[in-house]
Every structure is written in structure tokens, then in C-alpha cells.
Length: 104
Image 1 (spheres, helix red, strand yellow):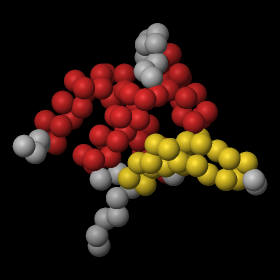
Image 2 (cartoon, rainbow, N blue to C red; image 1 turned 180 degrees about the vertical axis):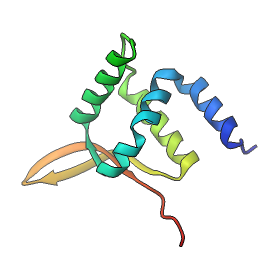
Image 3 (cartoon, rainbow, N blue to C red; image 1 turned 90 degrees about the horizontal axis):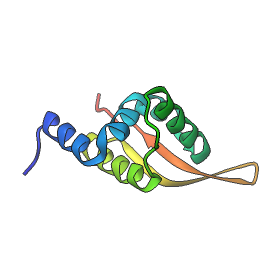
């Protein structure tokens, strides 16, 4: 069965927890604007979020990637959690966030 918007959000938080849910909600707009988030910048952002909110242990990357994939399925935001970008011959690994196209 297809869940309502409120239903999938509740299920998402129950599945992935308040830390991951809050982290994504707080940062998704910035990630879309940036387009590409290198892993080191993403991890720094996660650590900062956890410190600011009193969470001692940041969630594991695998769990965050699972959450991002599920978030993508429910919102239409295109998220590639295994992106590679080359800048001046240097390989950068990270995540790509693309807003869904809105028909005019």
C-alpha cells in the first residue's frame, strides 16, 4: 500500500531514527543547492549536527545512505550516494543531490 505523505514521514523516522531524519531535513536544501557533497564535507556536517543536538554517536554511513535512498524514492529528489567527481585530476567521492524537475 502507498502511504500518505505524513505516513511515510512517520515510517521513515521510525525506521531510520530521529538523528538521521533531523539531519536530512535540516540539510537537504543546502545539499540540493550544492549539487555535489564530498564525503569529507558531509561527514563534517554530520558531526557538527550531532554535536549541536547532543547526540554522542553519529549514525553509520551505510544507514545514512539507506535513508537517503528511501528519501529519494518518496520525494522525487534524485540522490546518488556513490558519486565520483574529478577536479583537476583529483578524485572526489561523495553524494549528488538533484531536485526533481517541476513542469511549467
